[in-house]
Image 1 (spheres, each protein chain N blue to C red):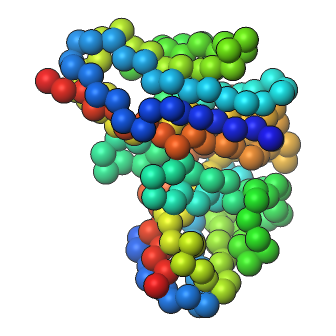
Image 2 (image 1 turned 135 degrees about the horizontal axis):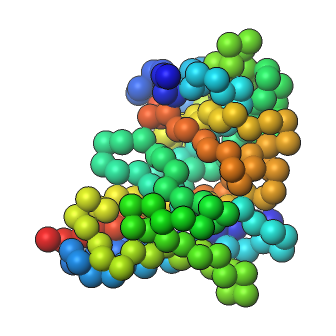
Length: 109
Length: 118
């Protein structure tokens, strides 16, 4: 069964510092991986997906199949990045999306 | 283009009662997924509806049921409420097909309904 683990419930960094939110998954097939973000008083929204290989709001994430990881990174954190971040996995053409428990990122001034 | 809406915003019920939650999908979307998010946890997949038919189900008992209407809006019904059903219930709409979400589909989430079971 597929599973997503986000080992850090809370992560705090200073503005301008690099940030990495960890995500590990377990799934024997080819996963589809996503990062979702929820800003304060806003709804959950897609941040990025592994297949697009793009940078969104300065964030990137690389799928590492060998380490079964999909860590989210940003070289210089901004205060507006403070939010709840969820890593999610689904199987190809499957509707059961599994979410991790989330990491609350706080960027201090 | 209107976004996903859910009603009611908050709801308080007692154990054993039944509840119906509603979701209006985003314009042009034919697929609705429902999630349960307990406090401190990520969303957990309940089921998905595609063109009025259930199109996949997570690990939830049969007392969790749903409907999708011809306009693609959806309902989540929970019978015989238990204390552990207290959670935020999210719906998400997408234009995914019968095969389910692909890596290029985007789910758009509603604001959720907060259910408290006393």
